[in-house]
Image (cartoon, rainbow, N blue to C red; front, side, top):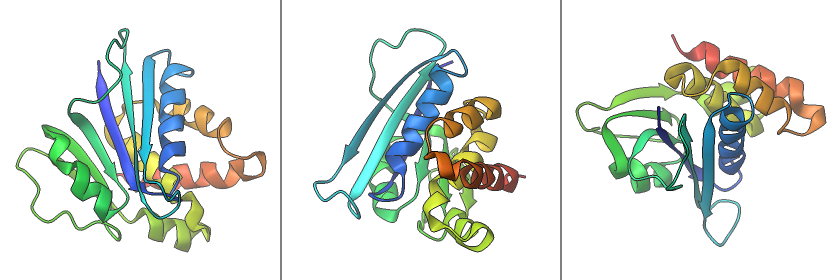
Length: 177
């Protein structure tokens, strides 16, 4: 099954790394096909950025998103820019301390999380907000198996931070009820 996923936020939040992790989890650890592309403003940190990931059982012939099945929004600017591209029956996951979605189209499934607050309060490290968000994304969407995401995290983050990142992932995963 084809899944079109967009993760958006601002530079410095780990948006691009999140896309790499999802793509790696799908392609290397779940035996699916995946593509990932990224876009960011000219200022690296603080400017809008996004990554789009396609995951499919079949060969991917067109590597760009037409309409997102899933939008993960970590900033208001990213949400505002990409919410219109979300499918009518899509999934919106957002950090409720960073994004005010207002009225969302009927049919869209909405899942808020306080990812940044959880990273700061529970782990003492705001820098793992993206991994908290990936844990929540995994639990909500089941787009990639949990075990595949864990393996991709282990091979994608700096060696000395693996345990912290795995705790962040579990924190986000367990936040989904």
